[in-house]
Length: 109
View 1 (cartoon, rainbow, N blue to C red):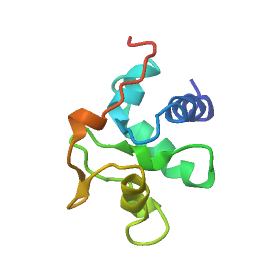
View 2: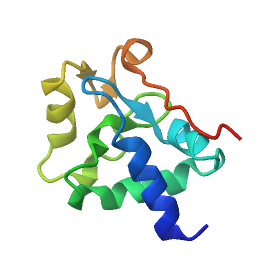
View 3: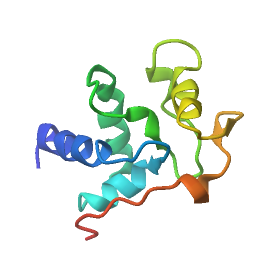
View 4: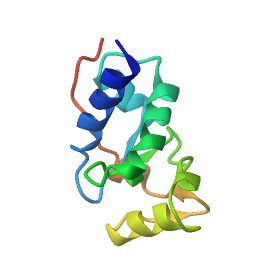
């Protein structure tokens, strides 16, 4: 699978994340059948800031940390976007992760 098609698969899953929910890099990797590729999902999300239709702010690490926040313009844009959707963030971490976690359906291979 080329990086381009991998990235497109990542973006297709990310576009499905519901308003007010988050998912993880690992969950997206698992959903596209590449469960050991969470880091590559992170690279894909880094490039998603130019794609308005991809809600990259809704993707966090497995502990709920806003590890991608430095890829957003402004100091706290990722946190502000999540908070505007009702997600509670403190110290760069989603507080109620179990309640707002969305698990994408996919290949699960």
